[in-house]
Length: 110
Image (cartoon, rainbow, N blue to C red; front, side, top):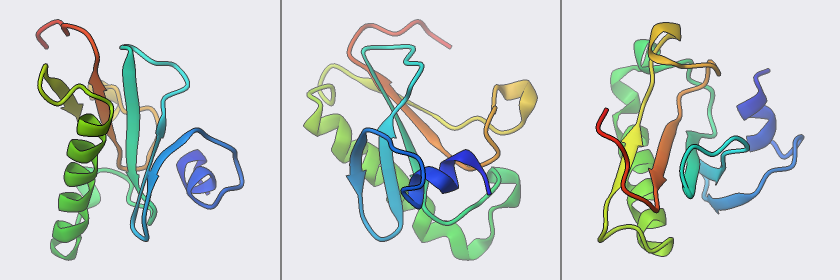
């Protein structure tokens, strides 16, 4: 099992921001911005490299969950960033598909 699977299974405590049957969002323990939330599928998927056609709806749920959380956190109007890293060279450190929702300040251009 991976650390994000353990968080989704409630084996590791986390600051859960949102949860439904398919998606969970929780605060990043090493935030890089005032709002830094990780949005994950509860089902293990390594990365975008291993996505299948049948995952299309799930990926949409991740993005919509992030959008809704941005509204709840009050960063929707000023702007936020969604980051989806794939592979080590891109900065993916946990092999479980996840979005970084970041905002709450002016972010540098990537």
